[in-house]
Length: 151
Image (cartoon, rainbow, N blue to C red):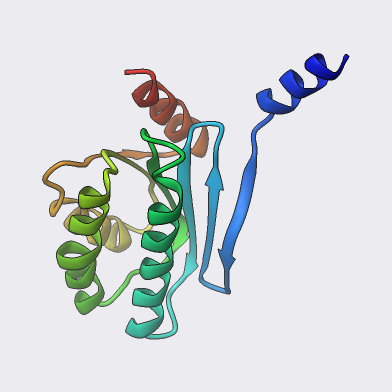
């Protein structure tokens, strides 16, 4: 019976929280595996945006050893726009570091705001090694990342 229980436990989605504030929730979903960043509204200021991105990189560094095919998911459905300097920071600091650490797939669940969508597209253009895809739902994003894990 112990084997059956441990098998059932492993089959369940394990989402482990890592960091949370009023703008960002960062967690590890080891059922895919991916690091999921959920954004709500806008960051308080650029240093706050950069802090959240550093927490994302910190979690990647911590977990990439455990999951050689670790992916990224950003849930931006309720995210607001970010400043041009934050877009620049993501393009020049965050994206290259995610690639250096071994991330190859990024699923972004898009917001309704056309302005925020444009900001996201601009950030994704910096990808050299990461394949970024945009989705309308979490379910679609999770499904795609699972397929990428099986490649």
